[in-house]
Image (tube, rainbow, N blue to C red; front, side, top):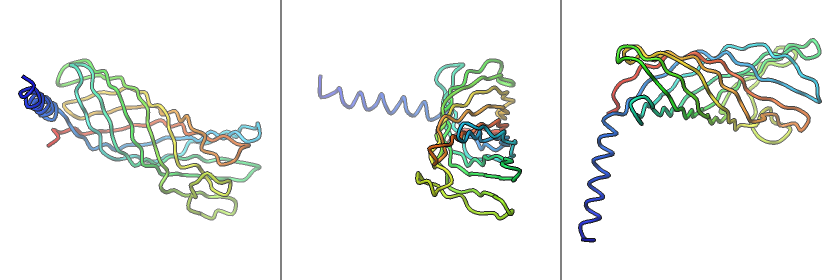
Length: 205
């Protein structure tokens, strides 16, 4: 009996994986970021102004049940904010590689579905710029030392809603950063982003 158990289990796994792979959809995602980076420094909060950025990448849709799907992805995402500190205009615009891990509940017909979703995201700063006094643009320095501009790793939570019209998904979401990105012990910087996305899904091959 044991001699047949391993081959039978292997065949079962292959069948299940093949069936799941046939149902997986992939989509190209692009959209707009309206972001702020809240700044609290030595107990004094600076009101950030909204900065427009972009995001683009690939999203996968993995069915769990008839109404629930799992949507992991890989995105390039530009965030940032503008500040006025001591009457000096300051801007910062980090660019991240971001991995959203989203659980989606959908209802409706094949032609039109309404969805709500939530889940964490993980991001790592790879590029970006800052504009300080004098208007000179400089590249952002990532690291944990006080000489660096920002810590590179960010983690947060996304939640939002959308519609899917025959495979074209339009969503709006709010991303709340949980990590303190400041390299100074006297300051706190966190990402907050309103995102509007369009994703075109197709069958993954």
